[in-house]
Amino acid sequence: MTTRDTTVAVFRPDDERLRDAVELVESLGATPVADPMLEVRETGASPRTDADYTVLTSKTGAEIARETGWEPGETTVCAIGSATAGALREQGYDVDLVPDEFSSTGMVELLAERVDGARVEVARSDHGSQVLLDGLEAAGAYVHETVLYELVRPEGAGGSAELAASGDLDAACFTSSLTVANFLAAAEERGIRADAVAGLADAVVGVIGEPTRETAESEGIAVDVVPENADFDELACAVVERAAPTYHD
Image 1 (cartoon, rainbow, N blue to C red):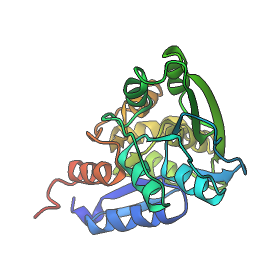
Image 2 (cartoon, rainbow, N blue to C red):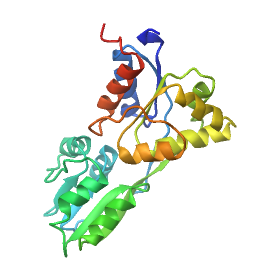
Image 3 (cartoon, one colour):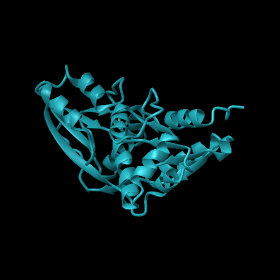
Image 4 (tube, helix red, strand yellow):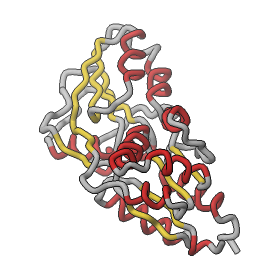
């Protein structure tokens, strides 16, 4: 198989993230299959301004925080991951803390010795991990969660599931547990869930992070690639290299 014949499903929301993902896969010499599995719906809420620590977990959250006019004041701004930190800085915010491990667990480990008795604001989507809230509360923090946006499955999503079911998908890049769940739900609606999962067994499946791996494997999807960092570019490069290792030639 040549690299150009390698089809790679990407599930990013239908905005610049999807366009960037498509361009990256094309630059690697593969053929992207753009199938957005997440749609962002803003709630209109803004992070609280009276917290000692404020945790943001995504690039989308950083952008929405700015749109709502949020100003950090004296709060310590914490970002899960370099992408979130970069997005916050792009929006004009200073970032004080970023965990070494880009995950809810990593953030809990970073803050555990700091937040006893402190007010911690967690601003994120409606599908955030309970691990973050429980871990901070166990560390003695007074935790408040603000849902900045909801994540829903776009109408019509699932073309990649049809390709997987027919054996025509060579690779897939799952960026969250929710993208896995929505892929399977789209396949279920089409009556091809079992065939789609079987098709993924013959494809290279990459995921960002251990929670996404656990979700995929619990649904019978074998995972081939988990990048060291929770970064889409790193994920896509590793997946394409695994699916078509001659692309460097």
